[in-house]
Amino acid sequence: MRTDLLAIVLSLPSLLLAQNDCLPCHKDKVERFALTGMGRSISRPHLSAGHFEHKPSGTQFSVRAENGELIHRAERDGLAAEYPIAFALGSGTVGQSFAVQIAGGWVESPISWYAQRQRWDMSPGYERETAPDFDRPINPECLACHSGRPAGDRVIPSAITCDRCHAMSERHFVNPAKLERARRDSICENCHLQGQARILNPGSKWTDLQPPITVYVSTEGGPFKVVSHVEQLASSKCARESGDRLWCGTCHAVHGPEIDVRKVCLGCHENRLPASHTERHEECVPCHMPKRATHDVAHAVYTDHRIASRPGVIRGEAAAAGPANLRPWREPDSQFRERNLGLAYIYAGQRELSAEGIQKGFALLASLKSSDPEVDETLGSVLLQKQRPAEAAALFRNALRADATNPDYLHNLGVALAAGKDLNGAAAHLEHAVRTNPGFTASWLLLSRIYREMNRMDLYERTLERYLEVFPQNLSARTALRRLRLPRPRD
Image (cartoon, rainbow, N blue to C red; front, side):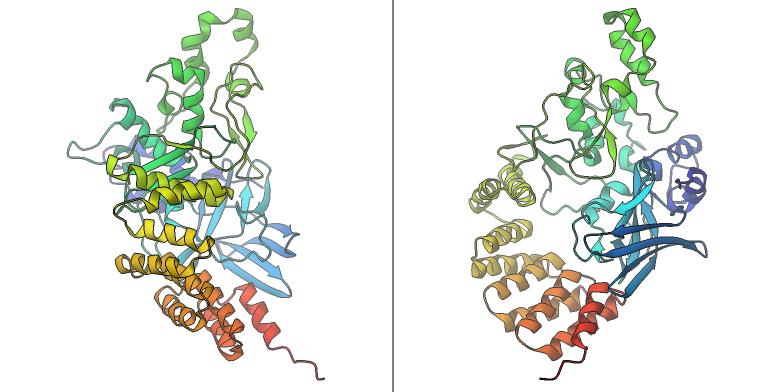
């Protein structure tokens, strides 16, 4: 089984070329770009049948082609759910994940295709799920890097478009290679620098064309991750000693054809290496930039951009641990310095289970003279962890005053009310939450649990039924409803 590149290219007119304003004047560049990994970042799925068993949950997954569509199916506890795939995320070089449309939004399939191993397996983050299902929304931050222009509900987003890098201006377009170093590099950093946390400035959205992002990295280094190409390259001796000459565009030609990387290396090293070395080895990359397994995505290997001076010798890699100290990759506006750093410490600390990181961030945010919805919501999440639900609820209410339909804010207020033992208040609020955002699974599940805890089994059953009106194939809800309706044994 393999990704059919020709089939992907034939699908491009509806995903990239037809939406590209540059095509009439720059046809050759646009068409060459469409064949690159970024040009194939979103495509029509073109894979043949397959099967995979997720043993921890006992779920059987299968894939088949039917009537020109790719169908993903999951079976567990005698029930099955299947959906046609709307589009694939990823070029297919390393692998692809897949999107289905449910409740007017995009949801990630629990299984992905890993091209390097030629196998189906769990999508990143799904590996330890006890009941994997088609219920994880594809968030805007994910689409911000995988797609070009934002798409509305029920509209398939395009692959990455020219304006993601060339940012239209009054002068027609911007050539990144001609910008000063920081601005040039920041274009690649928007998607190729993950760090420990990525923080938007207040009022910005991931759906903005080039939103202002502050990326925070650990001062102690960190494990090898998928989206850390920029940080890896910057740590290399080659990049440090080149001034601003060695950057992403030195080796990557986004319009194609590919650059001969060996010639790039020999441009500096030919006279420094013995002739026997350059004659014996035809390529530099396999030894000095090997592909390695990553800390955050299983079943795949990625190119290590740290450019080891000797094969197998890698410096500056720390074990996975909570962030002791973070620093901004590029300094944000001074007015956002403490805010963004505080958010970064909390987000990284929550992900790595670092109480030290969470407390650092909490202290920074609590000392701010002014606030915004994201700060209020984040402080509230920490107060919930500290078992201070009343204070958390007050902060979630503040966030909702500024953004009354935000599903996370609505849900978290319900969590805080339930944690404060106000089950009636929590149920009433969550009823509002599911009416406002019917596709937000977490609020439905919490609402059903609260009704069950209140011993309102009639409302518990009705909530499961209402959830299934939105997600009619959800395996977990159908299983819970079936168990609820089983005849009870007589005494």
